[in-house]
Amino acid sequence: MLLKRLEAYGFKSFADRIEIEFDRGITAVVGPNGSGKSNITDAIRWVLGEQNIRNLRGSKAEDIIFAGSSARKPAGIAQVSLTFDNEDGKLPLEFQEITISRRLFRTGESEFYINKARCRLKDIYGLFADTGIGRDSISVISQNKVDEVLNAKPEDRRLLFEECAGITKYRDRKREAVRK
Ligand code: ATP
Ligand code: MG
Image (cartoon, rainbow, N blue to C red):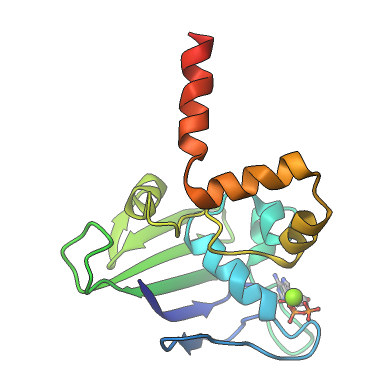
């Protein structure tokens, strides 16, 4: 499945609207420290439904809204959209292209959309279930996750391999069955 486009405004350091087109193959983002490279992956994780603000390197929800600078006023809203090519029908909706969006207002209200239709967070999770893309999947690996893997105990590293192999759900089901 191809991630075609990321659009964001008011998200973290992106005061202005940014639009990034992804081609097939590998895309590398380069830039000085603090220029916003990791904020791009934070944006991707957020729109996919990340609810734990610490995983987005913040301490409260509004930390993901542009906080302002000496030259700019703070933003009142953060919005991120991701567009996937769905020609292969991997996402269970009859659209060739699927755009998911998330908005957060400074007042705390938050909204989710699939192809511009308002939906629930649950619908976003449902859309990506078993595709390897969702919030908890290993499709986004952060800097600290790399350190974690390298420093993990063998038993903990094994859990990651099990997740990659897609057998975590069987272990969970077994644990549940044994408990009953
Ligand atoms: P490195 O190379 O060190 O990993 P990076 O390019 O990944 O850097 P990021 O961590 O993506 O950089 O960006 C950090 C920058 O984003 C900091 O300058 C920080 O001030 C800014 N930033 C984070 N949240 C906000 C916010 N809510 N409003 C404005 N700026 C923000
Ligand atoms: Mg970084």
